[in-house]
Image 1 (cartoon, rainbow, N blue to C red):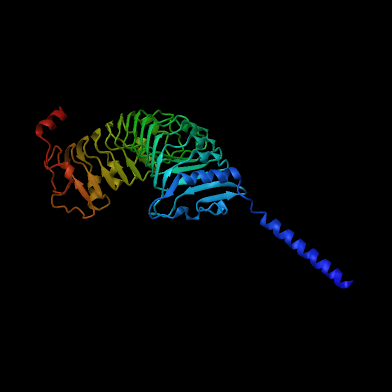
Image 2: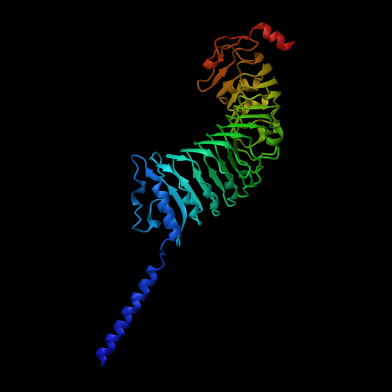
Length: 402
């Protein structure tokens, strides 16, 4: 009787252990069928580029949550990173399947640089939980879907270095949580939309074909990084810039902006101020001593005398403007002390500079003075683009003074 009792107890313990084990195994839920089928469709339209084995782990007889680049929470895919993220590794090739819109819990979707062709699926707009969308350095074409404006949780949109055309949808500007918008190096046209997000910190639209003017209220004061270079934007920028006092990077170069450069912009906490190759005009009067390391105002229509407030800039490009008068002595002193590394003043209407002809320019510094209304008192190497003529013709100088 005791033996039978012990056997029953052992059997009970064994059954209990099996039940506990089954419960523990059951914690790892099977991927939802809709997500499973969506991943299968996505995989069918894509392949590894030569040298990549990213899809080697995508064996649909096993758990897709263990696939490379697939991250799950419970039975849903929450992140999908296609391609090997290691620097220099080849990416994937093919097209994005509309089934991506079936991954209803997806919060992050990225594709490493590769050869993704075709247009962005409109089904992306169904991913209402999406916070991060980055498909950079591929071959996407067509227009940016207007329906992306439905992604109210989207914080980062990076579609840079593709072949996208058309306008930037105004709906993108209505995204309330947007923090980073990077659409550089495409073929986008039209104007810069207005942005309602008060958390937008990075706006990079360089190397496109954008035109029109910057409306004063279109850019939020929250911006830290603004690059609009290599477009066809025009009109004044003073009212828009005066609101952006948190900028630490500003590049408006190679556009057709006009009007004056507001003195307040020189007080912003910038590391780089690039306003070259526009049509800015008038005098430049910084509100105080300029502490921005690099200031490039070259190839504009700026006039008046050079402000001594620029003497604390390390790399100063004022060439190819209409500056007149003498070069401030404070700039010369800082140059000879090697505090100024680059001082380009060529192709202006300057009439003098206080420098000893025997002074030695430090090897770490560059000075260019040619093609002004004076004979350069020191001979220093200039960039090739400055030409070979040392002094501006007298007739031009007389006409400018007159």
